[in-house]
Image (cartoon, rainbow, N blue to C red; front, side):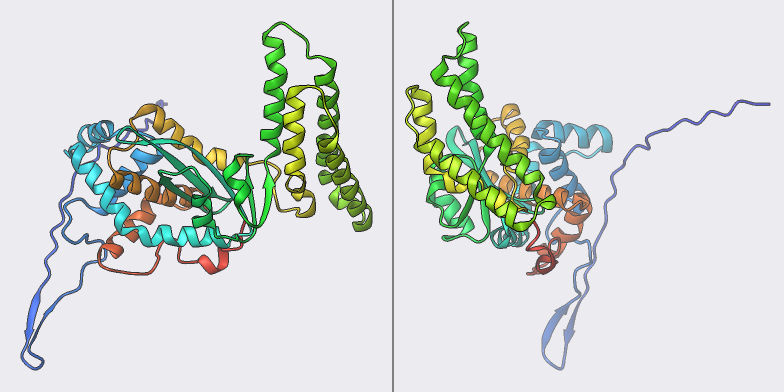
Length: 366
């Protein structure tokens, strides 16, 4: 009786060149020249096929590979030579022709009932810029701008904005007009850093630091427990407990404190006391901004591995293609197939969204 052994092998990729021939005819009746329409997967005036271009986006922005390694992968695994400059120019063209798709993403984010916003540092040719994210559980939009001020979220979210915006305590978000939920994780993080600063110096926090720390920690824990008990309490009981928690929060921010940290922190809490417990009034609103921070994480990895962008065109392509990539991942779409379908159509002057055409059914999703 023989032994059966199964071995899994990778089949080497190879390059195929497709020739598109479009016939033209002269009509003797209307005295016009007519040309056959483009093939479904034909990229007008392009030498790289849609699958090749889609793989560039996947390698560059999902796997965070620099252009020289994308070039090596195509050459070593597929036998296709594409220079780094050609890769950069191809991605810029992709971004230009897929602007219709990113405009649809921005529209969905603006009309959504919940949206997270955050920003991080970026560079274009060595000059300081800011990468902004506007995201929820279904849509993700990115923008690179010179400004870190309130103009950017006002322009992209609207003034006043629809729905609820979740953010950290950065001052630019204070000028937004509409419902806001401040991230409680950022609040706890700032307190923890202040407490750890004493420990690094080999000291225990003094009583005038510890007492407010325990008081606020207990207050935030009570709010979380109340949110978890929402379905087990009557509406009247739940509303009464929420009102008491908000009163406790207001009193905490109004009390006098001797420690410098709590003087600053209490002023912040008093300023934002109406924006800390919105998640108790709206059960669909999260109490943290983790969604925005997770969406920015891939860009931080790219930032640490590269010099970011060299030109404004490259930055525009970066923001647009990442918007499509991350939105496709959030909606569990095959990004390679989506780009292969959409890009040739848009190169053929198709002016409607293809990847995200079902906006009406999804615009009110979280």
